[in-house]
Image (cartoon, rainbow, N blue to C red; front, side):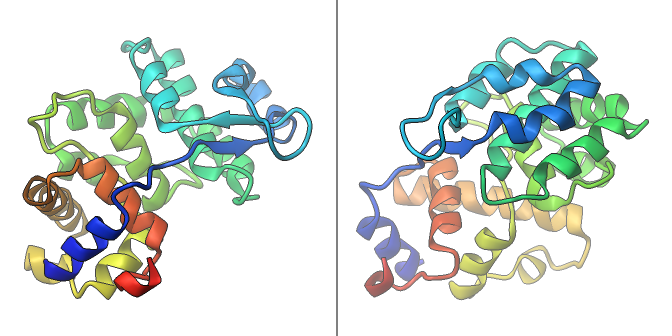
Length: 224
């Protein structure tokens, strides 16, 4: 914990930036599913190529507030999450998103996992999620996006390879912490642990998750 405390202190002024994406790259993959309008969210980018846009975590949260139980709305939110998670660095993102949107299970999976997350049953959500082209790094982004519970709840967090790399560098193992190899349980333990750490350190769990993502395994204060 002391190493994490030093890391948090050294990076306290840093914050998560919006992600830049290219609508023209995504459009052919989204329009066949009626989701091309999702590319209008966010704002025009002031850097990068002409026509690029920027999408932040707050933009995804804002879109969530307009989404009910309608499968179309959940489809649009899922597409936005995939865009936000991919940016311009994951060239496979559009193709994988298209594969997920074409999956016959999509409407049921998005509806069911959203319900599980909102009820606080993260293990059930993890066990239920199965769509073509979408692995843990992205479906936990979906969990984080749909979790609209209050600040007092241990809300869903993203768990991808960069976060894992930082956790491992800090000497924390999800398998050891959970006491089992069962991934849904390990994910739920990760979320509760991060929230406990965040409360002790006086930060939000979402910011702490982002910091571990940003550090990507470089957890020494000298590397910060």
